[in-house]
Amino acid sequence: SQQGEEDPQALSIQEGENATMNCSYKTSINNLQWYRQNSGRGLVHLILIRSNEREKHSGRLRVTLDTSKKSSSLLITASRAADTASYFCAGEKETSGSRLTFGEGTQLTVNP
Amino acid sequence: ETGVTQSPTHLIKTRGQQVTLRCSSQSGHNTVSWYQQALGQGPQFIFQYYREEENGRGNFPPRFSGLQFPNYSSELNVNALELDDSALYLCASSYWPGTGFLSSYNSPLHFGNGTRLTVT
Image (tube, rainbow over all chains, first blue to last red; front, side, top):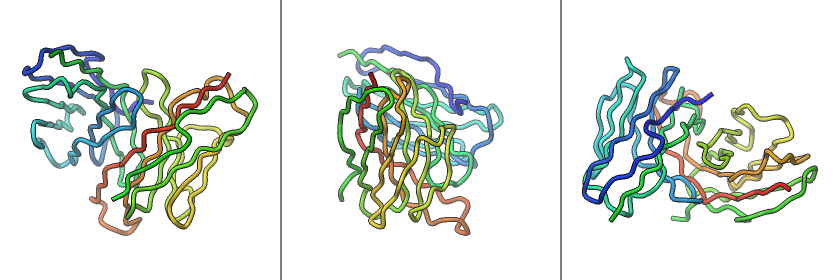
């Protein structure tokens, strides 16, 4: 079963706008991670937020986590055409090394 | 720092055949995991190897098996290929201190670019 479910499935915006993607998960997690994937390539880790954290920033990225609602959001500010990719959230239920449960992703298109 | 590399990049096999995919971990990493990603879907966890032993498996049948070598590289073997096995197979490495260490330890995964397997 999917740990994460992203919303929306697809998002198209203009360069310079902000992009917000949401993720919901079903079971309790130790941490939640966001990854980016360019078409046909591997995933690149963006940011990790622990279950005891509520918000985290990294450059143009802002991630929030609400464990009571089992949801997270990823905000990309001042988007660029190079941000065009699929974005996945993934929950880690316990510190297990590398067992993540991914959602089905949000396809972000940033138009120049 | 050498990243995660996978080979081959593409592979075409016939139903019923066997396939071996290879992965070299990023230097300094001791854990390898394999994921299957069908077209338009998120990656699905197959299994993880730590200290050359399988240390966690997802919902995949026994015909999916693996190995981890002393240099932390890894192989994924799939026997009796089925059409539904067509997917992008991703290898990821990370560092994990193992059980008994701080439960709050978190390590992001470093992925290779995958092997695209097509079963006809």
